[in-house]
Length: 275
Image 1 (cartoon, one colour):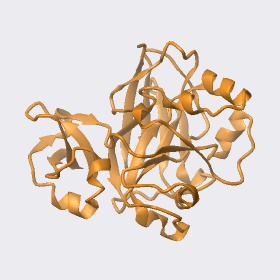
Image 2 (image 1 turned 90 degrees about the vertical axis):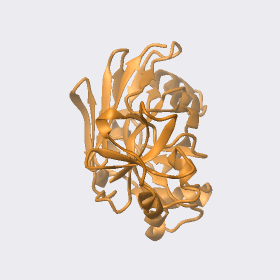
Image 3 (image 1 turned 120 degrees about the vertical axis):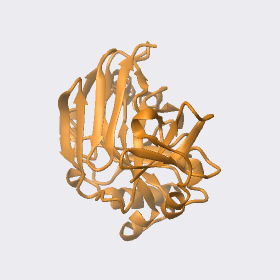
């Protein structure tokens, strides 16, 4: 089962839903996005509240499951192959960075190649959604603070990022432009047959496989990443952490379709367009 944010032609606005066996059942909660719902709910209570209208998945429009988390973070160089292809050493401790929550966009939504960008890259990533406030969490207890898992694309203006790196500037802008964080198609809660220590991740560009790896190749696994981040930053329900991209990153152009598929979670599909 999964949790999604969706809209339907018969409804007014978006709703949360539980996805199971090709059907979406509306969750009766005073929140339409997961970051808002997790303030008062856990997976058990959300599943119990799935008592509303049901629709076939193919008949609804899926939206990013999280709207505006307090924190949207990425982890850099967390696959050795990606560090090697960029000419960097594998870090001795996790390197994390902020992305603007306003960069979040929907599954099946457009990724914009902005006029300021000449080299736009995909970065398929395995992400997790924080389920409860996490501050100085021990790695052994880290998954107790995770609600579930999500596919993400850490879209990057590579030309802009390299200029900033060469100038010793932060790379926030190259990661945070509008539409630069597609998320979805939904979130798969902890306990729903996804083992974060061993999950296949694949990125396809126009149906060609360009990234293929597994989270067992992460330099720092999910518990280590969560423990490290929360030594420095308090994470809140609904916050998102993207855990890094494997080797094989590359350019996208207007008209391209990029798909990030996470085993047991689902496929996130987006088209690149001009403004």
